[in-house]
Length: 271
Image (cartoon, rainbow, N blue to C red):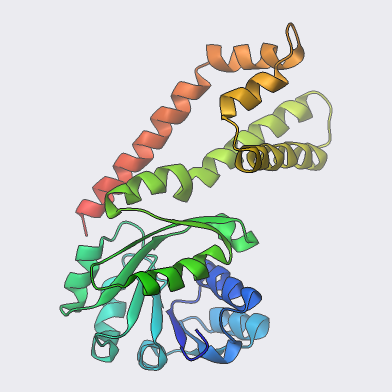
């Protein structure tokens, strides 16, 4: 992407994660990036951290960009697209990270033929461990999709999915950090109840979750097999697992995640 300018409409947390990944991986230089936001604080933070060009004008960012990220909340998207509509041509590649807003809905907002990729990242992107999903409309080439995939892979893992799977992605990765934080908090609460200082309890619980996730990803073993390997006959772990099964942990997670997916589908119907 040495000869391309990458623009951002919106300079919040997710745009910050994407910009950080781009620069750290060397995909593009800071001179190739421009970000627009209405917040002076957001722009000042981007300038101080990355040294990129910033502006209050969405039109200025769009006019400069070959690749343009729509990094705004869904309710702001109609206004933002109206402001830049005259700056978007058939060659520009648009990437939307607006949750719950379909490719068809965004195409309708522009009212013209566009190249569009819909992305669903998650907040661990802020620490370089994001999980992102991408889907594209028919005007995006395989090479262009590969370019955007390389950007999202610069701050975590990334996979291409069909748009019909985006709501499922919301449940299993987009919203799921909250489930994991709840689990970590509960484990820490139990440790505190048994006398461990809270800050130390969070470190023990969080590192255990991090290590367990790496075991799944790096060994390729089934999570059930890894669980069995920890459960010695008559030991402490199987005692805990038996209580979790008795209390319906597995069923609760499935129900919660499917409710999340349904909410995402319902939100999409409103756009």
